[in-house]
Amino acid sequence: MGEVEEPQFTTLAERVAALNKQKNFQAPPPNAGRRAPPPPPNRPASRTASAAAFTAQNHVWPLSQWTRSRYTTLAWARPPASNANTDVYHEGLAGTPTSETIRAQCRREAKLEFVRRVVYVYLLQATRSAPEVPRVTEPSRPSLPPRVPTLPVRPARPTAMDSDEQAPALPARRLPLPPRPTPTPRDRQEGVPPPVPVSSRPTFAQIDAACRATGGAAVTGQSASIPAGDSCLVCRDYSAPDAVAAQYPRESLPRQDPVSYLAHVLCDPFPSATDKARAIFTWFHHNMAYDTHGFFNKCIPRGLSAAEQIFSGKAVCQGYADTYEAIARRAGLECIVISGHGKGFGFADVKPGQPIPDFESTHAWNAVRIDGGEWKLIDVCWGAGHIGADREYNKKFKPKMFWLENKLFGLKHFPSNPNHFFRDDGRIPTWEEYVVGPFKGEQAHWQGDGEGFSEYTFSPRPKHIPVNSGEVVRFQFGKICPHWDGEKHGKGKPLLLMMRIRGPNGRGFSNGRKDDLVTLETNGSWWWVDIPARDLGAPGEKLECMALTTLDNKDARGVTAEHFATRKGRAAMSWSYIALWELV
Image (cartoon, rainbow, N blue to C red; front, side):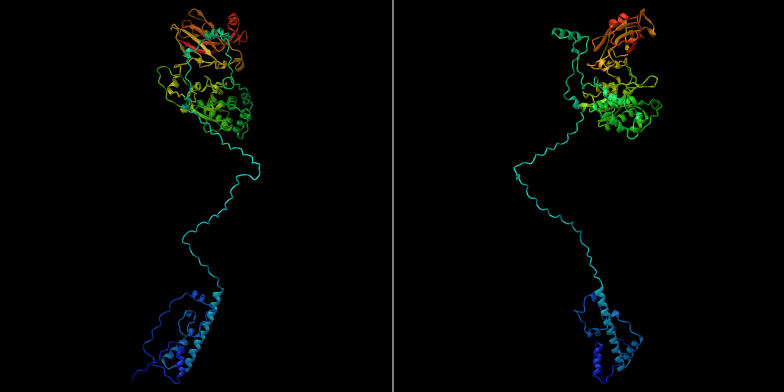
């Protein structure tokens, strides 16, 4: 008997419709031992996209779509089937379905449809109420900065004014003057005139003869009338800055910034840079002393500021120079500190045949720019005082350390930097030239600066004078400045100078001769006398150039040689020495 083909139904609705057409039907026998394979899983879909892709207005799902397939996109919302329903399903498969089974199946499908609609409405409301999530897109490259808005083009300025009146001309802008270049030795050397031929210089007798021949007055015996002016630092009037420097003692200075205070009170009263520099120079003489204790015991304080140095009241050469620079710079002056070697305390002249010592920086001084832009070398330490033979400090003002010409200043100061000689001729001496000196050998002792005599014009310079040379020895001195006037610039009228010849050990007789006093001739600018070497005395004796200070217990200034000759040996008199030699 052939098998009867059973119609295949894809959905439960088709099967129910077929059963309704048959009054009596018999379900095909179950295929025992083999169950239909489960359908393949549906393609997964995004829940959010499915729920948000439709609305109630633009899409309606037919009821057949809900019952056509067991597996839909909303199948995850179905409640799990109960055990009773599962049993009924199995009974229907095992035997012939009854009408009760079919009705139960329909009721179950109706409930599922209701559940699907409730879930649909719930999801639809949730989709409408949920806020829209903004989509974030990552830029592939950084965004460019916003463009600058284009400015409107300015209208061209009119070439001519509407009115006849012309606008006032603006003053031309002046650029500041460039800084003054520091003259170098090479610059100084260029354009320097040749040296004056000293050998052809006329004598005073020749000058007198020429003046008389032309009807002029003779100049012998009187000073040449040369106007000093402010260009000569030797004859310059420093009374004003020196007086100001004496008005501000160290004890009266404010504790707060004494450097600025001194720069103000010492320098502001003077427009001249030379007077400013002089006022500071003189202030050190009144208020600072050399630290002899620290110098000889090698315990000099180091690293003190300018204010600490001022209030301590004592310093060595480095402290003097550093403090002077601080005050000068605060006052607006150009000033530097120069270190090097100085022929000061403890220096001994190199004797012939002795080796030249090595260079050693043992001293400090300053260079300050004065009127005319000139760099002037000054030594504040030596100008304030000096150390005596007893190692005690002598507070004695030495203004020569301010006005001395740079070329002569370099005879006792050798800087570590060769550019700091600041000579007018630009020449840089060697270390050997400096140590030996221009006169070579030991020098005679000199003490004539206070009377206006120049240390660099007296002769003979050697300390030892041979008495058996058979020569005539000239002793001469000149003024520190051609227009120096003792009454105007110094202590008064000139003193009478004379050579004092002594016996051995200061006794009154030497080779049968008494001590003698030989006066020097003068023309007001030079003092001189010629004495044969054999008449100076015996070897080992002292030879002095003396200045008569008192005669008859009165001031001897202005005493002439004629008046002295009348009182010689009859009146009390006293002297001060100018120079000292030894006879060999």
